Amino acid sequence: MTKRDFLPSPESRIPSPDLRHIESWVFDLDNTLYPADCNLFRQIEARMAAFIRRRLGLSMKEARRLQKDYYVRYGTTMSGLMAEHGVAPDDFLDFVHAIDLSPVEKNDVLAARLKSLPGRRYVFTNGSVAHAERVMKRLGVAEAFDEIFDIKAADFLPKPHRATYERFLSAHAIAAKSAAMFEDIAENLQAPHALGMTTVLVSSRAVWISGEPPVKRPARPGDRHAHVHHVTDDLTGFLGAIRTGAETRAAG
Image (cartoon, rainbow, N blue to C red):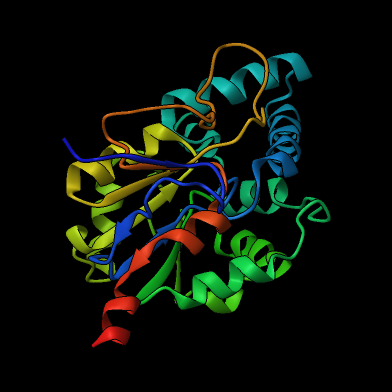
């Protein structure tokens, strides 16, 4: 079984994770690149319920129930609305991503560490390019990435569907064995692991989805899964501690 490392902070005494084989670095956007306790998803969740209420003429309580139901059954609320109500994806995405980004603070250290990663760097999100660009600009990491693979590029088939990861890898000619996937939802790392990618779970104590029925949640510190190679509650610290191929080339 592959060794797993838990790296809770830059000061951790656990040996640095060895990622020298990684040439492609793939990051989820929301609650991964920025801390989940920014609670941006609570804003998005509220706007999704408002969209459903207005479009389908439901009470807010019923709209929230439907939003969570579609999220669980289809992977995203939008996929459920497209499948069952013919909702145009751009209408939905434009509405739900019109949120206040002020809770996201610029992170120059994260930007520098992302830029130092050898190879190519990608954002892989179930959201839109427009939303990703806004968040990345606010966070100060936009220049650290080569490409954004969004829900449109995935032909509106969201993570965690394996076919979406296969589409992503094929579109960018990425060898799974030399790629690492960073995610805050453990379920979304099952397919990357099965395909041969190195998986990193970014955990948090934040609660960004509430209510019933039970829904997928972000990872918590201490979570362990057979398909997860590394776990951290500090992405910036983790990137500062790992061993990468850049060290090997510098030594040579």
